[in-house]
Amino acid sequence: MSKFNILYSGDQVIDALTLCDYIDEFYANTDLTVCDLSVPKILGVLQATHQDFPSPLGVANASPFKKVAAFTANFAAEKPIYSPLLPHDFGELSTHQNAIIAVSLSIDALEGAVLKCKDRGEVVLNNRITLSKHYWKDFIAAVSDTLPSHHFDCLSLIYEALAYQANPEASYARVI
Image: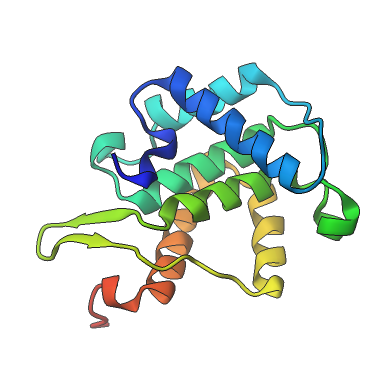
């Protein structure tokens, strides 16, 4: 199983446990010992991400970019985490914990993700996406106001562009 399957294991209970572990570890790494969240909202995010997948390709055939976009949009919109992050670490974005977690997990998931292309075969995204602090702040602020039905396609394109910037050899040829 590739690393990308972090939230697409085929079993939503396993995915919920994986997501809760990720959130717990993220909070622990920022010196917070408690994170108040809604398990029903976590399950709702995963259900929306899987069953109401916004691409006609469906979850099984969608690109990693579409999968992280669906997760990011649903997680940021549902806001299942109530505990803010520490202001001395995240400044004015400390209350944008849901967008921060969604983007962080998505960037983690794209590192090492495999693209399955008809013409090129399997292409691995070997290099991690990195962002400037300025871009990260603006991206988190934008993701915080996401509506899944309106922003899925834009988020998918943003993740794709960022991944191809970090992995130019994986990008399609630019012809337009």
